[in-house]
Amino acid sequence: MLASDDRPAVWQHTCAPMPVIMTFSERLRLRKSIWWGSPGGWRNRSTWHRPVHRWLDRVRLRDRSWPLERWCCCDQWQRCLNNKWNAREFAALHGVALPELYWSGRRVDDLPINDLPDNYVIRPAWGAGGLETFVMAGGVELLSLQRMSRSEVIERLRKKVGSVARFPILAEQFLANEQGHYERGVEYTFYVFGDRVGLVQQILRTGQQGIRTTYHPDWTVFRDARGEEDAFNAKRAGPLSRPRPASLDEMLDIARTLGSAYATFVRVDLYATAQGCYFGEFSSIPFDGKGYTPAADSFLGRLWEETFPDRI
Image (cartoon, rainbow, N blue to C red; front, top):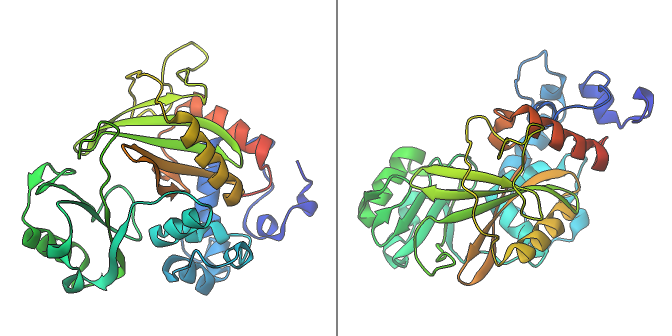
């Protein structure tokens, strides 16, 4: 560890000296405080640290044609990738496949809903947890498992975001799963520290629910010190051990590529589809830093310490 006086200015400005090893959830809470000034208020020094720049990182849209140096505008540049438009562009910059973008904009009435194919996804550029998201397959919204007409989608979207959304809305291609079916199937999230993948979580989706099983990169189930399976997240436990996916090596390569470019911890969400592996989004503070079991908290905290001890 660096001595207190040798740490980057952001550490000295925003936090007390770090303990020898922080847990994963402690790191995530520190990141939330420094990146977003949350919890806010005058007592949080980060609230007053370049607030305009923090706001711009939420709303300014970036482009895949930009050189990497332009993306890395400050020591907290990664937070701009919470914006899903920017995340798509950053993944494209690094040669990662993306679902086709049919439309983006802020005016709900401008969304060409009748020109979209039978299967599509509508989601906001900013948000988490599937809020304000519609996953449509043949007239059925798969998050709520409700049948909706296209006019109903527009009406419900308008109720959620207003006539003019605060952030752009993305209408994207909904890709068939590995079996060629248009349904919410299996998703993969990679806990990545640079070019090192710590854990892989496989999520079997059924409506809004998901059965999550956590693996090491060699596809052995993550266990705690007592040998208990899937000792990862207390509120979202599985396990449902499934065969090693055929595209795992490809997804690991993508996760390492994007993790190296991100240059600190990030969760990379990917989809294995009938057409190959596609990027989903980045998560910088997964589960808002809550609910991790002691085994997961310690394991991922040690990886962060080993790979990026002095980076948020």
